[in-house]
Length: 338
Image 1 (cartoon, helix red, strand yellow):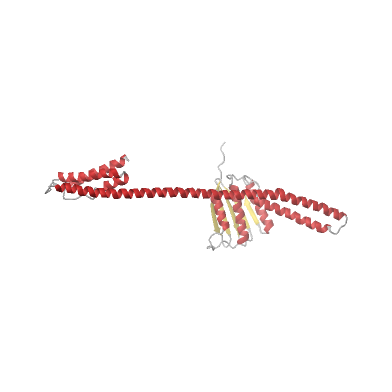
Image 2 (cartoon, helix red, strand yellow):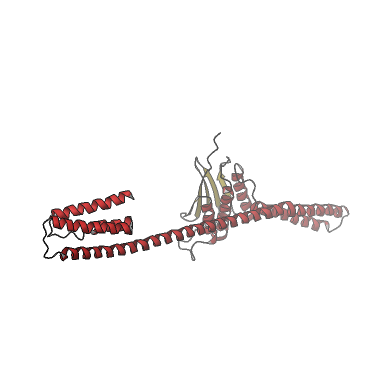
């Protein structure tokens, strides 16, 4: 503030010196507006009035020292009054504009803060929705594995015991009951597959590559489409929760390839370097249309959002001559220093 005050006073002095040196025939009236403007805009309305008075005084003093002669003593009084009124009007206009500008800036700051708060709350709610979804999937996976699978296993064992009893008696129903037991065993395997999909095992360290390998094996067996995993079995140092999002991205990408691309082969890759882990899912299907109707599909939006939650870079690439590759690159957690 002191520097602004000193600058305004210095400009009044400079303009007054030039006004004196050029004589009273040249009018420096407009140049005095510069320090007035700076005083009002950068300091305050009151200081602008002070600078206006100094400008009028400097102008009259310069003219008098330059040798101006007035026909009447009322002439300089009139000139001072007119100049002072003009400067005061300028000060009032500038002060009003400055006040409007400050109120507008304050309103913009308030609305920006409210918008940022709303966006943060929305992101928090979206993340909470994902967390709730993951918890429910884990719960259902546990229920399928620990309850339904165990119940079906008990039914299969009871059926097998009954089949053996019927076979020992030479009953014709024994083969049919054996086929029913086989169907129950297939239902058990299907239920276990669903449970693993809903709640894969450990998704950090060495467990994450194993989970992806198990996912590709399940797709190959369940859909009869070759699905390969390529990656090291070394431990992946992922942040808490990142493995779940990466696994779900891989699941969604594979589902998209199965449903929409008419792929004959799917490849899942996992590469790890010093700073990043990169997940890729590529297929040899028809590819993604350049201008899909309605924009990106729900699956792509979900994958992109999951990637944004974990701070990953998400890319979708059309392959040549055909196919699609989804790439998600996420930073690794720095190893702890002992």
